[in-house]
Image 1: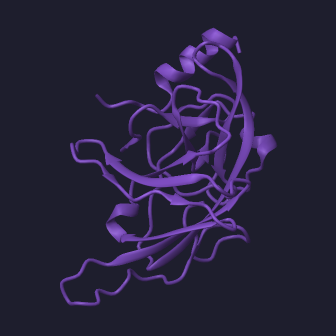
Image 2 (image 1 turned 180 degrees about the vertical axis):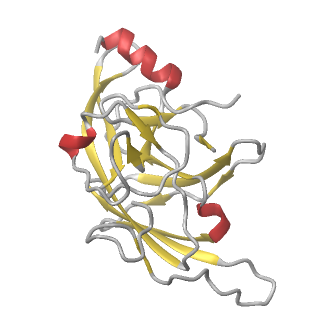
Length: 208
């Protein structure tokens, strides 16, 4: 069964606790691309690949993973997980996999809120290229965890991860990641509920 971003999980948290686009010429800090053209096939029949780097602030030691789950497709693609070291994690993936891409973040200090935190590529009310900090992020109630992707052969996404307050299913206070791109990216639907800027999934984030 498809699990939409933070549907059941955030509703449970509320009851218990009551509780960027890859811009080729964008502003400083936006996602940057190494080339304006798709990666060249090296063997004639090879698919173009993109070297995707996450420039991560605040989460060394975290395990990050890429997922592509598209509405209307049964097959879900996932990358191998990477550990963020010295603020970076990199994959070489087929360029077609960047469309509708979501990113999960597993932090060693996460208390377990009943869902897997995901990176918010855009918060409601923000425009592509807008800078986002923790003050802005934690004020948001809706977010897209789906990236529009890129056709470039190399791209870097600037990601911020902060320790956010939440609760686990029994209602105990915990810390969990609030993860977002520090520059608003091109995004795909849906825009889903985000609890104080925290985006997450219980299965896979399906992108339109």
